[in-house]
Length: 135
Image (cartoon, rainbow, N blue to C red; front, side):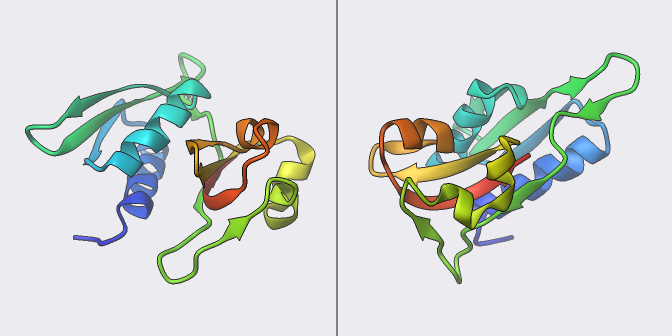
């Protein structure tokens, strides 16, 4: 049992994609639910079901190709950890995560207006905690 539910969720999704599973179950939390909403809006996952009575969320994964399944992302990395939080202004997202300079992948940011991707946070001119990077 882990205390960091976000890194546990990211690890479960990463491992399920590498094993080519159709779905994976993760523990329920409001933060996990908000991150999954961003992943669904960016088309990195197919859909998810919220099972509040069991305190679990079932995530249905999405792959490239119909015969040889390849995950839609190559990296799924936690940036801000419980021991070291990473905060950033909206102008400095690319300085913290170098890959964003090349327009590859998204960063998920926790702002005062909620959890969103780095592109939306930049248009709203909101900085915050960089939760993770998907690329």
